[in-house]
Length: 162
Image (cartoon, rainbow, N blue to C red; front, top):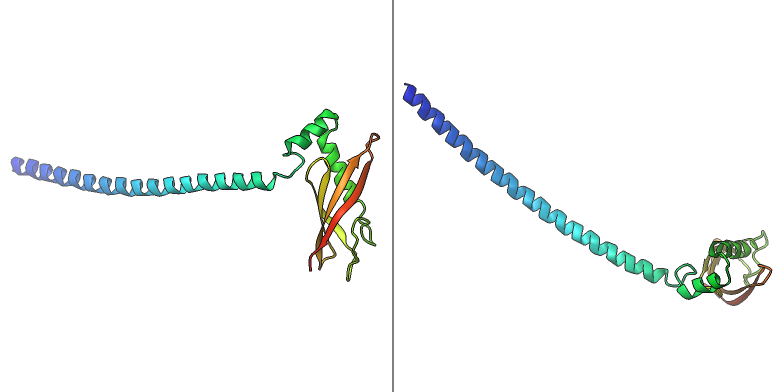
């Protein structure tokens, strides 16, 4: 009887070991599949980040802070770029009144045109977006900073989208 108990215990232990081996092998394989999928997703995310960084560099290529020549222009004159950006933006958007904006050469249909957004391209050029709520357009403005830190503007070109 004692021998049968040991035999049954041995068989039970062997079956338990086989069961654990099969179960853990399947678990390991499923974890490997999950890891492979995550590695693919990770690589895809890294590639996407690289593409987005390239797009960001292309999109900000024309910008006062990213244009090294314009940046050096202001460094040589010891003028703070943040000051210039704020003053120029305020100078253009500050011209928005209830009757329109002096820089915009068009009359609005229902409401006057107002400048919505200003982007400094470099140390000399600005592009501005304007609208009256229904019609949109853009301005190309040239600006100059005088010795007394006043700013002169000149509209070079304007465009009204149909």
